Length: 159
Image (cartoon, rainbow, N blue to C red; front, side, top):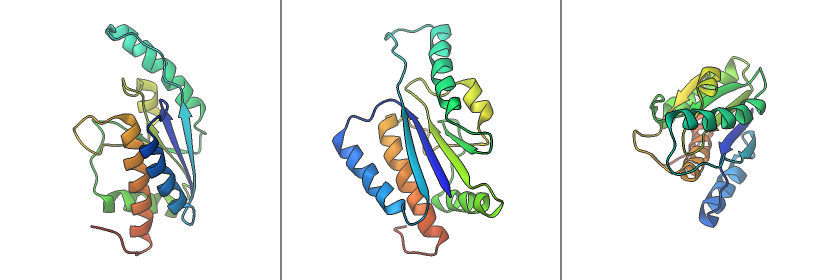
């Protein structure tokens, strides 16, 4: 399985990088995983609704340029579907079973994802109704992907 994690914004915090690197290393026996980090659009503090949509649109174009037609896209969004770790594992397993060997998880910038990216998404995922820093979500996501593979293989994991 090929997993692509597309994120908007630079990861600066060393402790988050270390955690992500650890889970990426742990994932190597299970899947080919790639993280694509796209630059976020510079924006002033106070934006109008139109300006917000323009920025999300520009970021969205960059995101969509990284996704091939045969990729199953899962967008991370507050309004996405909440799932248990077991449900996510089951979803990944079903995709592999039905020949979807390319999955892209998309984490937007601080303003969220554009309408075009949400339209392209085959599924949505939310880890909480709370707002989290996008950099932290990257760590949580790679941990949950790792956990999903452990669950699917019947290997021990913390409940």
